[in-house]
Every structure is written in structure tokens, then in C-alpha cells.
Image (cartoon, rainbow, N blue to C red; front, side, top):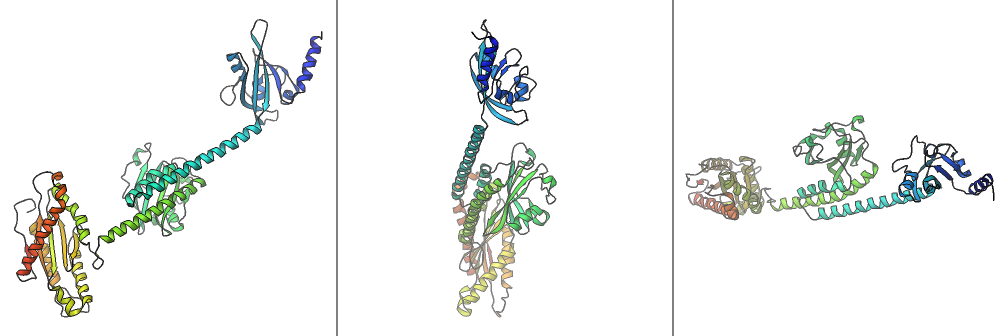
Length: 491
């Protein structure tokens, strides 16, 4: 039977042969009762606490980074495995997998805990590399899905307002931010067309910034983005000499601004803002460029569509609204008649003996006459009035909130202007017009009752003005014929 000393030496040699640290910890005070060579090489010595030596702590381990195996073993009264950070004698740290096993005395009380630790630094590095790879893949998948959703959302509309709305709604899936604004270029100015801010910033969350303009020359950062056609990150606005706060934006500490391009020209800016310094990174630029590329295509398509729609409403010779444009916008004015109980007057204008111009002087002179009369009508009425070429030598002008008497005076002024017309390079050409004047008045009842008949009501008042035009021609031309007055609103 070997002595206790001989047995201890035997176990010491046996455990010293192990490559990994092995030691025994007293439950009462966490002191080291036994340590093998590998443990001693790490600084584990007898009469020292485990948490002081391996964790550089002044009290037993706590928390997720330093979970205490002793506590787990005491609670469960069984072997446990935990991972935590150990420190070497030189102060460098490493991840360790610690196996704890209880040792009981004759009374069945846990007196010691055997700990066996394995350096898992390489494994943790591999796990972290895998985690980062999976995180990149996940972010790339989210980014790709966001771009796909954005593409679907943008391709489903050709309306510029819808495109702008969907840009604001979707950009957060690509680049997180606190606030966003979209500004479109108008000459030397930028006008805010969309603005959205997080709820934490109530003072700048509403839409009162929409419609505001800034002069590009007064905002160097905006000018740089417009001129370079490249995105710019302002990591800290407090340290950026070119930064000029616009509106109520003094809370902004970092900014990412990118141009909206159309035909390789900057037509606007998309600005993302954060209340955190150094928030935006180069990766955000890459993501935002991919986003704005799609948005720019949709923006261009919407612009082309709206331009096509606008051209479809215009007469190419006079650049006035055509008949389709007249009804497109005229129906809105008809609705206002009933809603606001205000009249809408119509001038039906016809060039007297227009066929003679074409027959005697040719179609080129006829076109000059049409354009000259169009200019007289356009210049001779208010900006809110709608002037259209109804067809051939006929023109229809809508005068919102103008009663019959005032409309008659306007028609007479326009008639005199036409009679005094002098065509450049053309002498002895006399031009006169005849005009019929009618007015649409509000009817008793609410607006909803008349929604379905707005077009019929507009057509009716135009037809009435046309009838009065024919009366004017029958009465000798070069005159104005005004409808009989009604004792209603507007007169």
C-alpha cells in the first residue's frame, strides 16, 4: 500500500503528463488545491484563487463572458462544461472550454471541484469567421431582397409622386437612417419634395419642409454632390467646414448624400441623416448607389411618362392645351364650382374668316395667325385660367371664379387685342375674332351628387358658349356675345 506522499507523487506525474491544464479547486474559498504542469505554466499555483489567476478578477466569475463552472456544478451537483476567457501569465487572453466535476467528502458534501480546461481559441476563431460569413450572407440576402422589392415597387408605377413615395418607404431596408429627404433640382435651386424623420425628432418629422427651396450655391456639400455626380459621406458635421445646416437640422451629426441621375446629369439629391457621428460607412455608399440606380431608372421612366402625358394634352403648334387637356383640367374646375359655390366662365373664341388666310396667304401664314391669337389669349388672362385650342381655329378659355359680367369684359378686351394684331413681316392682314361667353353656376345640393355629371356640365357650358359664338358670327363677326345673366352666385 503506497504512502500518501507516494500516491500524491504518482498522481502529480500522471496529471503533469497531460497537455491541457488540470487542477482542483476548493469549494470553500475557490483556492487551488492541486495543479498540473500545464496549469502551473499558465500561472495557476496553489493557495491562489482560480478567478484571480485565470480571469484577473477580484471576486468569483459572473456574467456571460466569465461563467463560473463552480456555481453551475454546485447548483446541479453534476459535471458541467462552460466556455469563458482565461488569461496567461503574460496577460494575453484565450478562450477556454472548462470541464468541472464535483468531488464529495465522506459526509456527501461537495468539497472540491476538478477542472480540466481546453484552449479553444482556434475553434472560436473559426466560429467567428463562420458567424461573420453567415452575417454577410444574411445581410447580402436582405439587401438583394430589398433591391428586388424596390425594383418591383418602382416598376409598378409610372407616376413620379409614387416613385418618390416608394423611394422614401424602401431606402431604410438598404441603409438604416434617422431621417431622409429628397430634393429635386430646379435651375440653381433644390426643392424638397419628400421628407421623413423618426418619431424621436418630432420637430422635424412633419411635412412642413416639403416645398422649401435652397440655393445650391449656398450649400457647398450639395453643390459638390451635384457637380461631381458622386455620393459624399459627412462623418461628423461639427467638424466639416462645408457643412451648412438647413431648416431645423442642427441635430444631424453625420450625413450620406447621393445624386439622383437622369441621362448622367444630377437632377436631385437623396440625403440620409443620422444623429450619431461616423454612422455611415463605405458599404452604405455601395448599397445606396445600387438603390439609387434603380430609383434613377424609375425616376427617368416616370419623368418620360409624365412628359409624354403632358405632350398628349398639348397642341404642338400653339403649345396650349388641346381638347383632351381642356377636359383633363377643366373637370377639376367644374368640381370646384359645386364644392366652393363659385362660378366658372367659358370663352369660346373663333378666328373670323380663317379659311381665307390659308387660301390667300398659305398655311404658313395661317399657322402664324393661330400662334398669334394663342399668345394674345395666354397673355390676356390670369395664370390660373386655362387656355386651350379646341380644334382648327377655335379656342376655349376657362375662367375660374369669374362671373358672367367680368367674363364679358375679359372677352371684349381680348377681342380688341386681336383686332389690333400686327403679324411680323406680314402687312395688310386684318385679323378679328368672335367670342361667345357663358357661365357655369353652382346648383343646389352637395358636391357628391354632381360628381358623375361633371363632364356633362362642362360640355354643356362649352356648348352654350359655342352657341353664343355662332350668334356673334351671325350678327356680323368681330364681336362678343354674352349669355343672359342669372340671378345666382357670381353675378
